[in-house]
Image (cartoon, rainbow, N blue to C red; front, side, top):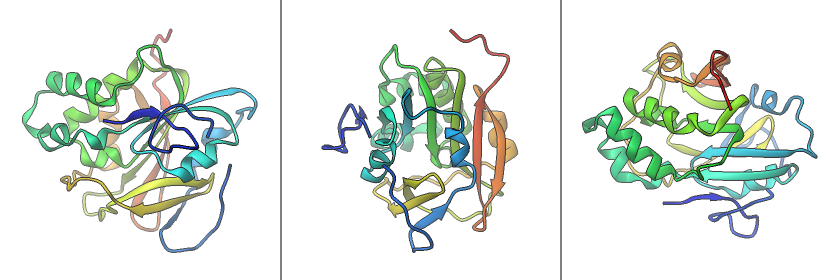
Length: 222
């Protein structure tokens, strides 16, 4: 499975110095209101370490090229057996499989974590297992971003996401396996995110919820 730092010459592979693209209102695009908050106070000249749970897309790599940045892509979707069988595994088994699937370098620590809507394809135990893996790779100032749902009736977008600008994402045709949609409303998801708290959430016109995440304050980070 692919777990790599992106390279602008090879979006599917490894270590990257990932510039903003822009545009508005076109089909296949989604506005963002909270995403810009991730970058507040960040000096473009400082080293920024970003973890994205998902596949590398050239638009995202181009966006982050404006920063002195290391991008790590942990493609959980390539672990099809794990995702298809997650309902049959214990949380302990999921934690072991999740760690192997994400294959994050042991010493890596990230400033930003991008989850997109991956939580909406995971069971509760799988979400906790994912948080358990990420736990060793965050610090007290780590921020996160994700997309949730307002209710279980919110439709599934079945799309992959790429960053066009701080205020806009591109929705790309999904190459994801045919995963079961497991919507977790915001309150429920907040209970499952063991190492993050939902600091701000904004309901979007399509019923999805954009979420800004922070690390839980009682943690004793290295």
